[in-house]
Amino acid sequence: MVLGGLLPSTPATNVLLVLVATGVIWLGSGWLEHAADRLAAYYGLPAVVQGSVIVALGSSFPEFTSVVFASLAGVFDMGVGAIVGSAIFNILVIPALSGLSTEGDLETSRVIVYKEAQFYMVAVATLVVTFALAVIYIPVADAPPLTGLITRPLAAIPLLLYGLYLFIQWQDVDDYDGDTSPDDDIAVAREWGRLALGLVLILVAVEQLVGSVESLGATFGIPTFLAGVTIIAAATSLPDLLVSVRSAQNGNSATSLGNVLGSNTFDLLVAIPVGVLIVGSVPIDFAVAVPMMGVLTLATVLLFTFLRTELSLTRPEAYVLLVAYFVFVVWAIAESAGVTQLVRG
Image (tube, rainbow, N blue to C red; front, top):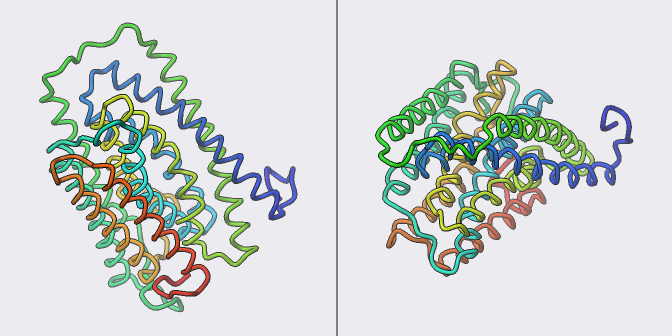
């Protein structure tokens, strides 16, 4: 039963709930992101920090809650899949559509390339190392080979790295020479209320989304990891897409790209570890997670190569990113159908 037993748990009902929950996530995230954007402007934050921290935290809340609910439901692989799938979507699709939504090239900067991008690559490597430590030091008996147990002490490793990230951003705010005077036209109390309401909507919608996807996966035999990579990842990435495209159209490429990189950094270093902290410990199948992390690494290298050349993303490069994501989706479907065997699930 779904919605507290009000509706029967049939495939048609679960598909309908996935669509409705996705729409509610979009609505709640729009309120949350608008409030975060206004509050960042009120407190006078630089554009890169506004995109990579304030707006990114708001647009990442759907992914964060999906991991929390997946962990509580005992399907942590689905939550990890949602994070990695969302990260791949963010890296390939969002910059591409942001670039195509503008008249010229999507301009970047050395701050984006040499600080945000490189720190994000460190975040990817740190998560892989955390998974490896779980397999090496805490293997799970009577489980598939290369299955390890991620405990709270191991989850603290990526959280500490995110603490360093926030410290670096705080230093940048402290050194910022721009206009930091408050905007008196912004109703701060109202924006904080809008932000809180957006969080509540997202919480309710993501809980239903995870439950419906879990039920559909059990009905049709879809591996939980791949269900997270495709359905949940696409639904929870919509707010990031909306924010970045709108920022690009407004000529603020720093916020557009900063949101993508900051959101992914938060998802990898905070969302997954917090899921572990909530339930105490979770098993992770290295043979499932690492191929997906490998795809994410390749996608990251492709994007950063394009961004570094002339510090811009051209329209042909944007189309290449979209083709790369299409190839990823085809591969994910082939995995679920058993055509390829790189990912077990």
